[in-house]
Length: 405
Image (tube, rainbow, N blue to C red; front, side, top):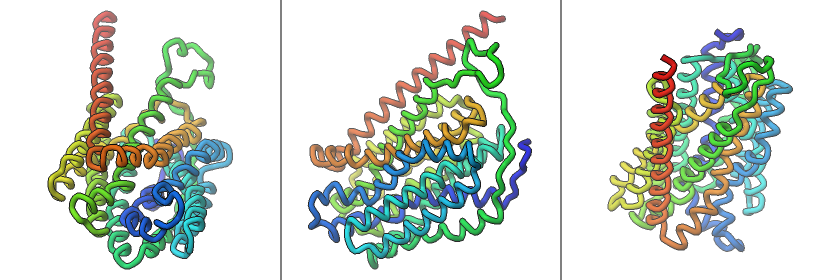
């Protein structure tokens, strides 16, 4: 057991903080068409309006390494509470913006808060829990993020029917989480944990074990690609529904809520899944499901079929981040946990930021529906490659076991 046992209130507070990071895009996703109409006269609005959603991700990319380092050096609690306060105030300020420039400035400040909230909450959860309990709580984190997304999206869809400004007020929910964190979150006392070391490091002195940089960079790449693809949904799904099915902001909110609900339910089962399959096998399933869902969405002939595709894609999405976080934490030392998990946040949000620059040319060149199909087949191919590598590794381990016997 960790030296600092978390209370239920601590656990819920950290999971609630994690769920707020989903709202960065979820709160305004149903408003994208309305924002395009409101600021369509601005030069380069076709690229700048999607940045309202993704600019916070760019700020997270820039700040995450520094935030991770600060978490390791100066403590997790103060960084988390300060970040939550910035998140709440900067996010809600979007409701008062009178120009696209003002709106983008507020979104940049929101990204400052997000960088600390995402990395801080994840690092604290990893500090407080170990073993199967850590697997479960990381799955719970994914579920809270998914379920939070459902609630936020449904509420945002209703609010967006009235005005594009109202959904920004939802960021104020960060304020009660700040209060809860002040009373319920304490700085954990983290003891060193045994980690799996690379061949050749077994006889190195304690603290001199090499970091598995090949694996770490692979984890970062998976997070980047997975969320680059995922953000096709909040950035382009509203336009797809409007174009293909003459949809409304409410239907867009429901559709995005479906993928987040599916991801939440899958994330809840991650702890059980991790005991039955390797991290690489789970990663193969992640990309396979995400890709198959996108192909189904692009080929959908009705709104109901589109929702089925979103459900399949969400099943893959739900296990992506818990799998990457647990994989990384299990292979790296505790005293470097903050900065390395900060790298996961950096990769994930870099994918979110880059997504419009990939999806917009696809939309212009192929159409929205065909763009989803093309992206889906690329994701399926990545899943197949990961699956073949997992099978190869399993055969290699089996051969080595037989030789050792």
